Length: 385
Image (tube, rainbow, N blue to C red; front, side, top):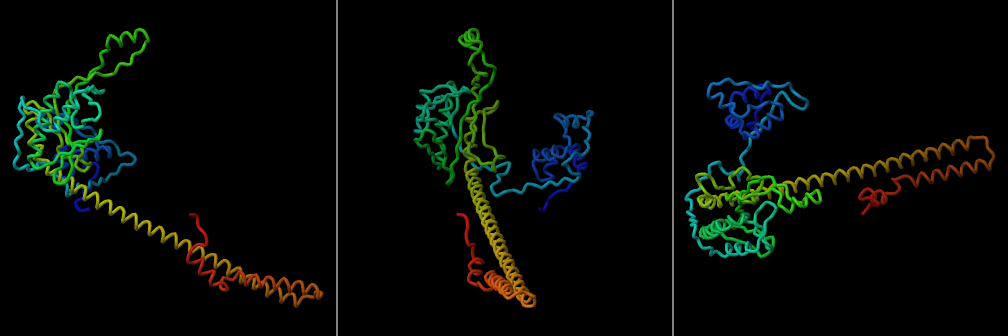
């Protein structure tokens, strides 16, 4: 592949300790994570956290020495740059005009799908992680606590209305396990609004303490989950090929999810295009694999047929050699009998044996049975089904 880099292990070690990983990775055409994996695979130590800060401030730093090469490692390391795919999005996507999505605190829930979501959560319990868990059917596009539900519903209502205004469609079947999907340029995109929960060791209830005292065990959970009120909206169904693009927006110190909805909407057409390109690329790859498998199967069948015919020909040769040998034996036996000093009765017996061997030679001779040869050479006389 063009652009492939071959670098010695010692040289890569020097470069890793003299240039930050992110900058060095760009020179090789790969990610810093990929470069770090290559270094770890080849036993090259990496600078720890804070190393480059010490370098910037002129403070003394200490390198981890390069260990001796181990089994399975090579002195020459080949680094293959990542070739961009048609579906790759740039790190900075030009979103164009970002739509404005306003979510007021007094917003009334009016969109049919938001109203349906609200009704599903009215008879809800808590799951093991503290989120509200509606009875059937489920609402997999929202996982929040009871306190965060009103805010989450306002966000969903505003988002649903804005999506339809942008020309996108919404689909949520009546099946119990149906997922809400956004239709964008012929592609379906799923998302989820999630509340973050903090985790702490479970504090036993009075009943659990009583059970522990009485029975010496308790069925209490290991952890307690406490809602934080922090929401995150995440695109759910992106394929592995699109793992590097942004797919979530969370509450932060300076910006809440409500202010990120416009960015999410503006990104949807780009995601839809990438999803379509990924699907087309997957289809081409599937067809390529099928064609390779077809060619391999044809080659296997040709090889098997060749080997079968070779075995049949070997059998012809074996019987032809046997026939020739028996024919020569019959001739030699006849000649020896005629020249031998034997009684007439013994000569007749020996000549009879020679005649039988000659007939047997004729029966074995494949050149006397062309129809049988053709039948066995064209296809096997029997096979397993």
